[in-house]
Length: 378
Image 1 (cartoon, helix red, strand yellow):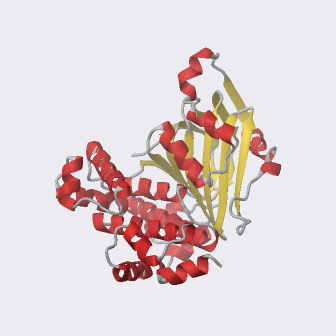
Image 2: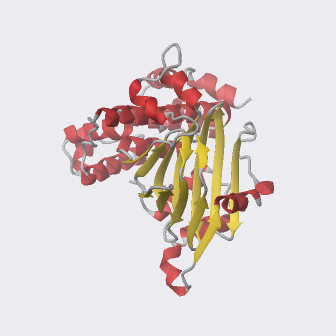
Image 3: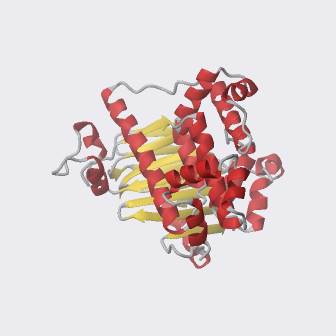
């Protein structure tokens, strides 16, 4: 699994189209905690407005990595709080996707007064953060970080103190959803939500619902697919909206199970999860000549049954289905970037028959490879 500083940094660079400043990437790769002891520890305390101003100061440096999409904006910040970036993509009216990364210079405290908010999912891939919510009659602290998420409904949020660790790279994916969009997704003909979801959409003067949970392997896989999105333009927008919708569907299914008291944890143990991810890496390295299912299971030290179950749980498909999709995505890349015939591309990704390759490519992308290649080069 991708849980090291260097792995996550590479993911970020891919997501940003490898266009981050080289100094920033170098900074992240230097594993700052290793030299932290050379400098005195400090705590930076900001109001939420001051925190936002750190980004607003760099608005002139906002980047549009997808020239065809003016609603896809990335801001970088180098200054008081350290190194940080935030990518914001308005997928459609009422659905906003954000990916945020930071390496703080020191411990960071951000104070936010009571405020109104929409439905939000925050998925943490790395880093540590302690959220302390305070009202006139209670105080609640929630520990967040890599492998966890927090879901908050719409309504009024208590005063909030963010306490961010200064020792790890922070990486987060966030989805903000307006209640009207939720009603359009799962409401009945009159817009009424199922009873189990009513607590999620509070009145504008009521405290919002919130819950912390552990991200499942399949959710983690989708989060990394979002970060590693290889597309631009219309394809990118459709791909990311599809992934965001898939995430929300899984989260709402889990929420319904929680409300009904029958939520079940993931089936695989941590060591089994690692073996499944190792199997995935083997497949990616040998796309054109992959091992058989039994040989792959032997290489990673699992029985074939658990390997198949693991792929279904983590990636939502079979081992063969995962291999086929990665092969076709690689073929799509080769058709765009290389001056290769369809037959050569088919062989490069492990298809002995160009006809079988054409059939599979058209089934996945809705167009045959030759037509795709011609269209992409215009």
